[in-house]
Length: 557
Image (cartoon, rainbow, N blue to C red):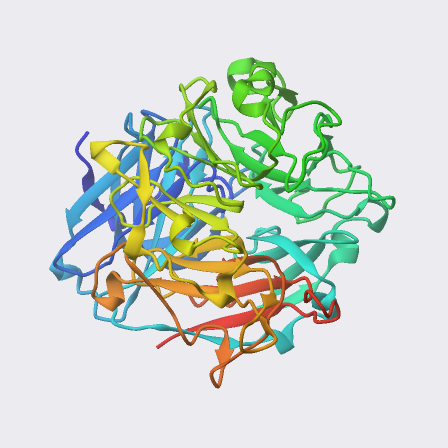
């Protein structure tokens, strides 16, 4: 179906697309290229909702709450434009269009975008809001604002998510940590610790991973807590806590506890693997595997709503996945990510193996059954801790970022960034080579996590790598977060090629600190449209008291 351009002044965003809560990226995600009035621009809305109506909105930022169970409209459509079509068999609603010059967007003007899909369940799913600065030649400067953080930010934060828990239109921060989950609520652009009132302390056990999604489709963002342990360091099952609608969680409000079929349920991933409109959950054993509960390192739990005809939000483990040969190896599954690597409309799976084993690629047949296609990855045998699928070069195919250890490995022999060959060979990956720096970098000897987003608001994806502190050759310790800027957009170079930002996370040429990164988030804290950077500090390798998280405010110059 050919996409159609409508003036939103007359069309609006009508009731059938009223929308799920923002941050439902697992069901709909929006991508854009640089925005230059009078020239070509490409928008892509990704979803597993094949054949379903889809829209992409262009306008200015707003927050318009809708009656529950619906969520928030985040783009003001008067004046503005919308593209309307359907999700194709490739899992995309893609529009390449000439933006009309009469729109009159001046250089430096911020434009907001949001996508929506009408699900087969009857629910409307909205993507996150994106912001792009029209015809930008600006750069991002991130300024240290850590002094504004709560005192509890010195308590060794782990992985984290930025999500609007209370439907007020701004992003709150949920952090995993030793001792329990912390809730930093966004109050007029300042993070305030409200952990004591958000989840009862007696229910708030240690957890090292947290994700959000609307698991029960009531329009509110729920929390999946994984990597849980008790006071005796024994593994606890992963749980889903359901949101009461105001950002409060408890056993009484409701929760689902997963069967503990692995040594640990440390690393989660969320996605609709059988394309039936509800969210399924993958849990892995994380950084270590003892085999005490059997050889499998991953457990796939299928939502019993949708095709299964059962109760939405009830989960059963997939026995076929559990017994598959790709799931009976001894190397721990340290990182996982769902994404459609071959553009056939379903979610495939990439797995980072913690030891020197080769990472894995599993292809989905569309019904939630996976086949090992690891031969489509280059033969790198590095030690990986995190993986992320994201389109780095805007060719419409997902590429792969892997956080690897370079300790004892030549960086050129580590597959840190792998590019999808795209239309020529969908889902077949090759090493980025010189497109992404692969020279030795003391700050990144051991890479733990990656974050991706458009840091400089120029319409392409940038990359932040979070490392582990290590011993330096000149200074005693090295290991600081590093930003790699995509050279398309404001840089005027080739999209998909990256250079290190030498000023990032530094003051006067000196790193703000070196530490073991616990996790991080890129999100708009102050509602000015650009992305702030938060990183958790889990201490130093020699000095465990080297603590204190960092918050950097983004100032587009």
